Length: 363
Image (cartoon, rainbow, N blue to C red):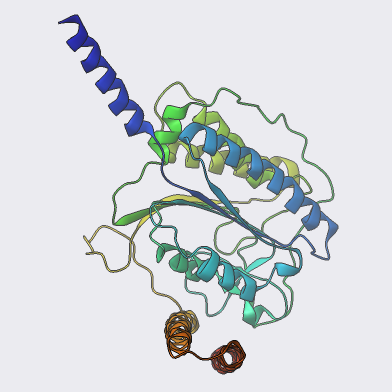
């Protein structure tokens, strides 16, 4: 009887440990203008990246995540083209995972922007900007369970398209006692970052400024970013259950209060959680569903067509090479075939690129 009791206890412990075992990966998408002409924005990128590293380590430890994928859209790679390549190719499989989006740089609202979110300025003309909503929809297509967005950028209107929008900066650190919460609670992480369902993504959004407002950037990241991270640390160290609305309220109140006290301006952030249906899943009437802009929809379809074309071409090339071996062709003949296949693939990629240029230039 005693042996049976011990077996039952062992099985219960095994089930508990399996239930807490985390199989999700963490994808960290850092989009940072680290080579900006402003030294304050460059320093802010470094400061923010360091604090993000700390939070990534805490997520790994408290959720038991074993694998982290870091994507750096920074430096000379701070371009819309490289960002699209990373999302479509490097982040091809994110199903059920956690995705963190961190943006530091210029932001603005064009007259075509009908959302409450900013567009990301990533060099050249503002006409080549990246809509946050388009980026988010491309990531939702990968079917993640949770997306955490932290965006430190202006969200004010610029009217007509122009070149680099201006970001107000302050060339000093804001002196405040940043609390250190080393006693993180794994239970809080499991509550806040748990998957809601297999057909829905939870999107947690922290934006430094609401529509029509500027963001004041400082070398340490600025008031908003530090208040957001401090609030996360505070509530994720709590001995009691918390919900996202508690964190949002704290971040909003403290950002407004400190911006008034320290820079004599009101900076009101956007802090909210939303739920998005995964593509091809049944809509239950409760989730927010956004449409891509016309330009983004055409570019999305272009990427899908390009992906299908490359997959089909590689399959045909492999079959041709297999047949060449089966038919006893010499090594020289097979090398010539491989060279011809590479030239054909390059030609098709050039055609696809020309199609993309026509799509971009038509808007």
